[in-house]
Amino acid sequence: MIRTDSVVKRHGALVAVDDVSLDIRPGVTAIIGPNGAGKSTLLAAVGRLIGTDGGVITVDGLDVTTTRSRELARRLAILRQDNHLAIRLSVDDLVAYGRFPHGGSGRTADDRVHVERAIGLLDLDAVRDRFLDELSGGQRQRAFVAMALAQDTDHLLLDEPLNNLDPRHGVALMKIVRRLADERGMTVVVVLHDINVAAQYADDIVAMRDGRVVHHGPVADVITEERLGALYETPARVAEIDGRPIVLWG
Image (cartoon, rainbow, N blue to C red; front, side, top):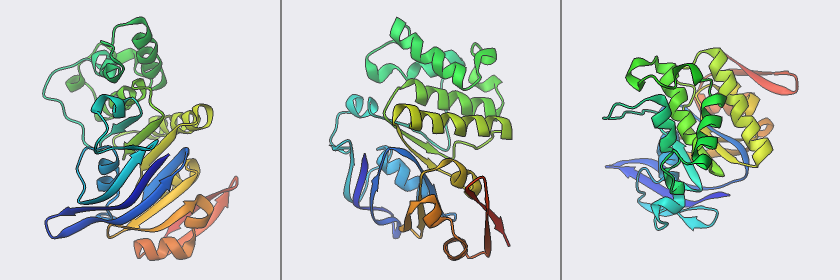
């Protein structure tokens, strides 16, 4: 369980996250909202990439601000929207970094099980020995996702994970996310701009605007014409395919 209680984050005079209280249950939760809604800021605060100016965030009851880094990293993995490294690494070496919170070097037998599994899941075998700066943007994105999966946590935060991915790999990634939640009981929180992807793969939706949560609940409760139209200030039509809503804009 991820819980935020009255969380506030300011950037100077701008309140980026404004009194956000959430209980995020196991399964897939998608955070949606217009640009500048505070989605990525909230995710970064949960992952302790940034500090907060008020409130409390806990993961399995552990306060993220006071829990030791290695202990938190055994429970929570995060993929940022922009990933840059100052050193030259191969895909295999990058994915192995996901094992460091568990005390491994990335080369123990147990580490290799997780590394090989993550590389296979993200379809990276063909490029595993290539350096990151030799890859396409989509291949790099998949490599960073694989590193997060190799961390083998019960909680996974993904900030715009579909950036640079073509439809084939985007669908494959979301199917992996769905399977991890279903088979391992993971809690996955993903920031998405594509509302139809959120509607297809998520259990719950958090809708944000101007730093505040305006809706939080099951997909069918949040993905409605009235709520989406108001959230994005754009007319929305909601139809249904195979029991899931699909959104048409304008």
